[in-house]
Length: 297
Image (tube, rainbow, N blue to C red):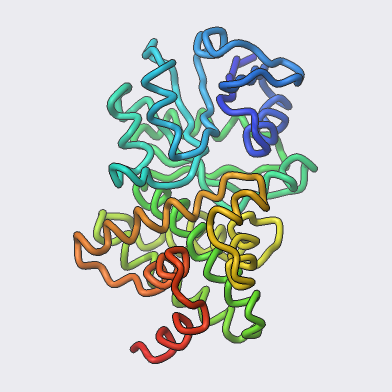
């Protein structure tokens, strides 16, 4: 059996460990000790040939600097986001430490809670090495259909951007703007996400598939999404620090919103929904931001 180590013992890492254990021998580790089955030290985990990273995007680089040693491991990046301080995509962070052909990216609609319940879903493994993508795809159990793609940048953009759009969708629902408004927001969000991704060479079909539309529709319409729940709380008037304290979870879309906004301004990309979310996160009136958005063309 293949030996895989999951790096990150949160809900998503634990769900992936459970799923991948069906066909493989899996270990799990984290920066702090967890009383769970097959938990090992970081050094022990890094001895495995296959590594699946499920760490928060903002803590990934510091974790790698502190812990990682390149021994030719094959990596599946299951984290989603953009590093705010550098505006780097997560695979770009890894390129300081490993070759491009060692990295694959996991994307697609997949709430951790439903994966843990062994409910069916479909995911995409993207990478520059098709053989490695197919290898990782084969590790998943029968209730997870895994496709392969070579569009790493598209997968990264979709995985990061949809969390910001989920916050926007939560704001809309929190304000009780209705189903029409939410559907309009998600549809325009998909267009905006595609516009942003094209600048980085992402493929159009990625945005129309599981990584883009699939994950966006899921994340932007369910209270199982922590980013959507963050939007609901923003609509109630809580600020970002209060929301983090209330949800007690990492809200990737908050930091990612600032990263995308910074990139968009530097590259002159029109991203009005992200700009609106950033404005609200910075304390602007929710109702005023919504009114201004409705006036835009």
